[in-house]
Image (cartoon, rainbow, N blue to C red; front, side, top):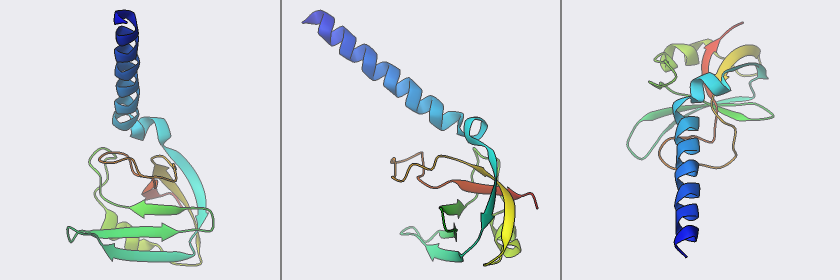
Length: 116
């Protein structure tokens, strides 16, 4: 019984280390350049009154938000450069999971910069 508890504790600890590493090193692990064609630009307010930007494509919905861990603080100026029905090559970071993980990992990738 004691061995089983040690094994369970070890598995939980390893799982927590993997999940927190994925969150901490997200920028380095997931940074990619992708080509997108914007179908819709969305601007919403969340429950806390913060402005949120979403960029819709046929394949995926991206977010455009300032994020300390991504080294990004230009969401307003980036949004002014984007237009619907145009193609862009952008740098994105994050995971495209399709579901939310509370507190630290979003289900949508964040657009960091426009390359062309």
